[in-house]
Length: 98
Image (cartoon, rainbow, N blue to C red; front, side):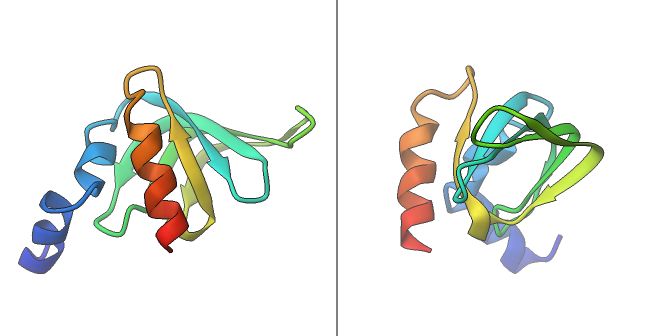
């Protein structure tokens, strides 16, 4: 990782997502669907790679199951996890700024 990327990772809210690596979480998307899976990696731009991911439609139908799934920060609304209740407020604020 380049020093500029490392600095951005450590000095922004991205570090909170890095702390969730290895945890199962649900990511709500702007189109009201959601993706549930284990966070494999988070880059300095807050893009997330999930493993064993399941994409669910707003009506609850399972649309897709994937071994690996990449989620760009621009389509995320918030990340939900039982390990990070306070983080939900931060991710919503960041998503609204984008």
